[in-house]
Length: 611
Image (cartoon, rainbow, N blue to C red; front, side, top):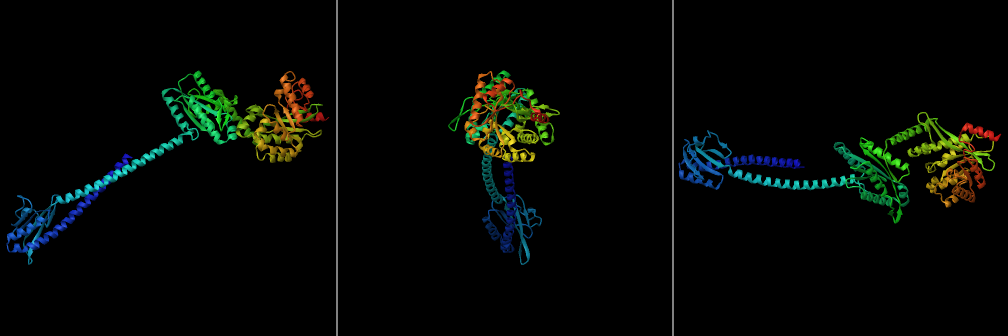
């Protein structure tokens, strides 16, 4: 800015000097022209006095030039170049007394820096009688030029002052706008803490300082538990208010040297300059988690929100920024997997789990496209009354060439995280319907298939099921769809219509793992369910555990009261089976009768049962 102002000032000064120079040469040329005319007039008027040698008259006529302030002196020389008449404004003992002494050497004029000299021939009747010599001072010209130059310079200075003031004011406004934009670019609009951009800059600066000074830096990744449910229930305004409360609570427990940033959604990050040992760091982390324990008040209601946090340190757990962020994020997800509401320190073994999940995801995508490693095993279902085969539940099995045997729980967990649960679910349903269509030669057997919340929420779910039944040739009444209580409650409003349409098609609907979720009895009465499946956690302690007996008895009574059949899964002993039969269970499933088996083996079992 200073350079620009100086350059503009120099440019204006150059312009003023250039204009002054032009004015000088213009004034000088004009003065020279006027002097020529003046000399011609005086020479014509004084010619008579020179001809008649009237010295006094010539002196009087030259004295008339005193009215011109620029005339220093005027002299008339006769035709021999001798002084004839003379006028001088001031005493000038050095004036030339002869024409030769003027030094003009026949020239008509001579312009110098101090004076202007004009020589004019005095003629009468075509004869030269002498020479008029006039000297004029340039002081008046310089004074006039000085006044003009000073005025122009003053104007230029005023213009520069105004321009400088405007530039300074504009610069101040720009600087203020830049500061405001910088604040907006680095501040989260909801919580007032730093945003992701500020987080990246601060973390990079801290790591650079840590490399130079040799200290450690800890990164704490925080994710609120079940925040989406609260946001959907009370609205985004309430969610924003809760986030502001979370930010204030975090600010109340962290040190002034620590940095809080909101990375987006319900994720926060803390950057800590470590001046503590690992034990103190763990206590510090627990203090951060414990600040979430107290209930929040938002939109007039008490709400409870906990957090899951992960910690990674530099340089112990990572040597660069990307690895540090990734490891803290990995530790945070491990905290969620361990039950949430806790803080977990990163461990190198966690990366092995992450690598395995990534490998499972890639392998699962390939399997769904063209692989042959996926398969279904079927666990038979038996009527409790006479142990006759009534159907089978389809269970996923996966053996990969490199990963080995992948458990269904691990495969489903990865599929849910990476968005493959719906394609996987449709693959299971299609394969199960294709296999069940081959179960012929005896009483009709139903095949039970589990579906996920993502499938039930799919707008095309109903059409996809109908297409699969039609293409695989399986009657609708031989398909039983099992949904957990959690799936039902999360998709109640959107899924009720779909469930009724499925029931109208003849498809059986069952509630899986009953007793482990949070079913509403009012909803159970309204939904077209045909069966409840008692979770294996209640069956395993039968008949010895009193609480399990009470729960099973209540579930059976409730189901029959609602007109639903009851299936008990996880039956592993004959005592359990006998007790469940006495309580009125309709269908039994478990290892005591048969383990899950491949489709060909189940076909053989069906053939044996039919025989």
